[in-house]
Every structure is written in C-alpha cells, then in structure tokens.
Length: 213
Image (cartoon, rainbow, N blue to C red; front, side, top):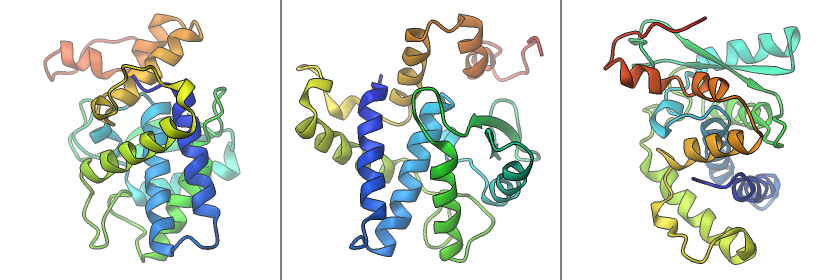
C-alpha cells in the first residue's frame, strides 16, 4: 500500500511544478492529469483502470453545478463497464472538496478541466491523449516511479529500507493505501467495504449483489 504521507509530498511537489512559470504548458497539462488521477484513485479507493473512466463532459457539468449548490463535495462521473454499469449511464461518486487527510480533489479537478479545455476538449475521456483517446495506465505508472524516487531521496524516513518501488502501482497500491488510512482512522469496516464496493461485485461474480442502500 502507498502511505498517504508519501502521496502528500508527491502531490505538493507536483503542485509546485505546475505553478512554476518555467514549466511548459504541455508539462502543466500532464501534471494536472497526474495529480487528478493520483488524488481520485486514493481518495475514492479506486483501481487505476476505474479512475481512467472519468468522463469529461459529465465532470464539467457536475463540477460547475456543484460549486453553486454544494461546494463541500465534487461529483465524480465514471462512464464504462464499472461496478455493474454497462456504458449506458454514469456511476456517480462523491468526493469531498478537501479530505480530513488534506487531499484536494476539487483543486486538482479544476486544473484538469482547464488543461483539457486548453487542448480543445470538453467531452470524451478526461484522461486522454492529444487525439482524445483514453490513456493507458503505463504512462501514469512511469511518472509514479519517478515521483517515488524523488520522494525517497528527499524524505527517506517515509520509506522502509526494504520497500521495492517497482511493486507500487496505481492499479492496487493506491486502493490498499486508502483502505489502510481508513483503518488507521478507526472507520467502521462497513464504511470501508461500502466505499470499496468492487469486493461485493467480485463475490457476486459479475452480477448485481444484494446490498443495503
């Protein structure tokens, strides 16, 4: 699992680079995508491929509406074969504006929307390449390793001596880190399992499980 303190330092490092006037526009757009994906994956306890299903048009619509109606939360619309959905409707998740652990989903998503609009995109996958096609996990994992190496050199006390950075991946490590953080905060296991609803669907072997509302 990825320790939330390490992710904090990485996101702060990325934020400083994004706001640096000497950073190129292309790099700033990429950082907006990286920071948003890292934040959402951890805060919502998602797998890496699930976060890549973020829909840009839905995000923009709910983002502006949410700022007027309830700025404490931001709506995350995922579109795809996700937790029982089948590409015909959004799976809507709520993320706080700022978490108790200090993560800032709304800030990163605002930068992501601005970055996509600067490329001329207002619909399609939010995490897309210059042609508008959804990005694979590979480039994000490559950036993650680079950031982890920087963090280990800068804050070595946050890393155990036997930690293998190459085993940390967006697909699993963020969700495990999110769950570990929730357990450290003594959240009820029912709350954790409700957030990680993929477990129930896995046990149901693809069908919709019977769960309390």
